[in-house]
Length: 172
Picture: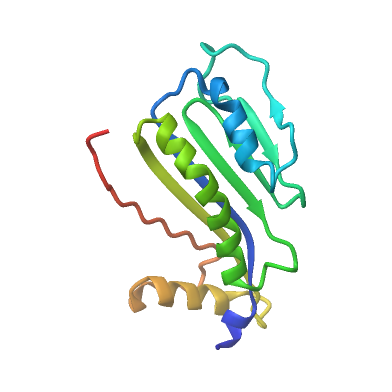
């Protein structure tokens, strides 16, 4: 394991799922609460707004019992936001297991509610690489060489983002 990989911290994961509008999402509240109760505080926060108002406003907000994650559910999307503490942030397998456990609970409900019309799933992982050098060029060089062609590294680079998008089914 090289020095940069051993100094990598997993800070945060965000999973965003977008689906066709489910106007009556509140009618499915009990199923979400029952499914998430082992891991999340109940009852969740419920937003007191009508079904016809702004579909992107979360109708339910679940906070995890240990305070590491939050699930926001609206008529058109679901977001899982996870922040890792020192028990998790150096272990990718633990982070992955944490997120997958929650997704495996939620996806069957979403697929049924949206009639299998999930339009988009996005995943964002925020990592922090610590470099021994004060200017952190070592960490950025490692990332660009790992994920870009070798000739693309620029010495004055101070931030790095990478986005992959795959269209699975464009008929939605």
